[in-house]
Image (cartoon, rainbow, N blue to C red; front, side):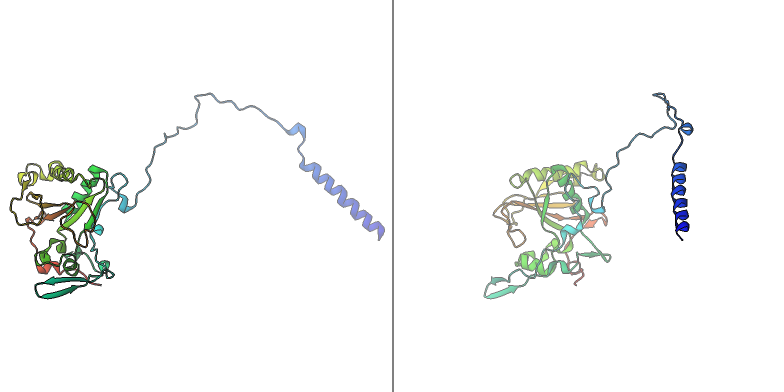
Length: 273
């Protein structure tokens, strides 16, 4: 038994030694040589590197500087069910108005699609591009309920805010120089080639009637009507800020080639959730 174990042990010992020596390379089998390459020698041409801009999300496309592109989403009604009750005294009667629930209803509808007049969106983006400053929309679309809540007087019951044809706004950094924004709006019509040669669009005139509760005569061309509200004018629940602000109304529908006039049917055409 002892002889058998000794034989196995010797076999394993010499077997491992032989295997180890087999794996080790022998000096006479190793060869080396230098690899040479000329400075201008190349196997294939390498295309020059080209800078690729970071892909943009859909809402980032066509944005100006770092400002977001204004879309119809910015015009959604600013009503809120947490706003307090508005109490208004008219002659011998007291009226109480509740606000709407804001985002729980749609924008105005045209052909079953949410709709804001494109010229308003285009103008506000043009202002952002020229100024490099944010346009703050204080009042875009108003549903009939929110419109009465904001301006509970009879003259405003036919506001074009309800049909997506009016917007109120101011420009950050230009709060104290509003007339420069008027010049930019006029510039929009001079630079936009679709209006080239159309004097009724390119040229603005002043509204001279004294039937508006503002001290600055409005500006108008065939397509839009611009009102400037100073610090003590036009204050309502949507415009509770201390800055001058603008209101732009659409007078002419470029696509349908017709005047834009408020009517109750259009004002009531929106989805209620």
